[in-house]
Length: 596
Image (cartoon, rainbow, N blue to C red; front, side, top):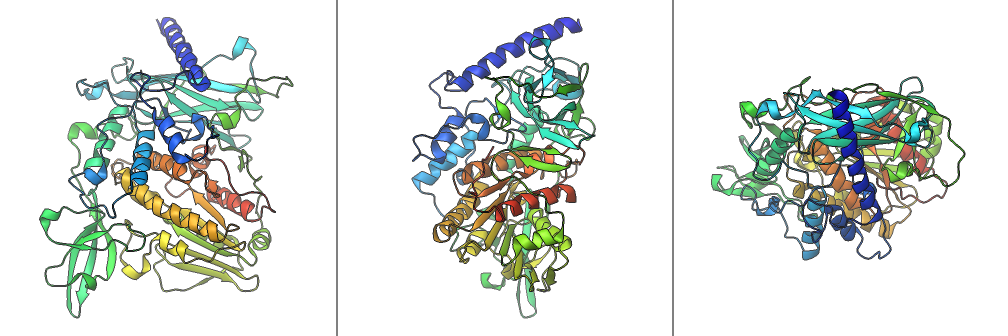
């Protein structure tokens, strides 16, 4: 029976590979469930990001984070639009027609497969079960074995808790290939065939053993719950501010948007960047008496007991899928053959890989190892380094401060987790600054004057060859509809473009999102699915700008032994900082690096 199943599975796999190859050749233009008249999400995004470049010819793998998903789904015509959502009728400044078009194209580009329309909600036993699911390594061509430079393909078949094959897609999977001895690892690209079958593909980059790892992060049914919460409950994390005058004080709720039927609002939308923020007006104080900002808390009872079964640790939440036979192949030295048909790692959407615990990116500047403080000092001498973003970027500041004894922190009397933070090396004329981004920020109480919007900060920089700017904005936007994130990035992107116009030799580094440990307590607020969607938007919106991408997603997902964490371990942070420093001291090479 098992042999019959595998034969049928491989027949289906071959059919999907044929269709996929046709898509690569341009013979399937719509790429959706519907007819060919529908413009697919990738085509829409590709046409939008750089309409002035008539020769633009990206392949679809380079547009979205290739690690987890390339979803061949039709555009959801009922896609929620945050600025039309009755829970948030005041998202800030109105958009231009061009901005509305960009927003629509970006939302279409990240549309996710859903269960077949009209189908009944499945019972828990009919949802994806990693324990009953399996993956099989597709045999090498003509049984000749695998060689460095080849591509390894894996067929994944998901089953439910009753052992029956799933018939639709939308599950979130992660894939990794690793070698523990060489401390080598590379992230895989997962293709959703929308019938319960998935394909994972890896470039083979080192000799010796290569072990496949597949993880079910979320079932398609769990993703449907997360999607609903993102669109319908942007209030599931709430914030507050204290208003004070003399001895009188009041605390009120704040957020990107607030229902207006609960009382009058104080509008704290930034007049320069246009980033929206509101608080309920205190009863006995004016709006200009607001003194601080803090996270208020996390709402409870957001989902039903039945839905909570979709988010069980060690059951269906970030759980490995096992191989039907072996999970390891032996890779032989590269063949010296001309005319190889291997698509190559970049074509697969792979931005780099680890070897001996060192990140080796494809394309761009070769990454140097800055293992000694003297190497970092030599690179940063006479440099101004400005870091703006969330706590995952603050890790870079903390790493440099600990790695270079000559850098001395200047006490600005600011909260350590919020900043602003500053360190200086007066001997070598190095200035290092870090500042958290403006609300929404899930942080401890902080004076409102300490929180500033990144776009405004960038507009205040002179820039130049001795200026380095690092940006990392994503983790605190996971509970909001994607439109909120799009508008924040649009303001930041505009400020980056203005900075590069007046000072084109400025080095601008953009850190992407990364996967993290997922727990039942916080999964409705901090999910890899939320982060992945934001990551896709970030990559698309900064494509074409002369900035450096530090691919934190793949650098975390590909690591051969470190677990996922919101705040990656020091080994990975060092590799990220090494990428940045390699571009700062790139000796005249161009900055722009590809956005897989």
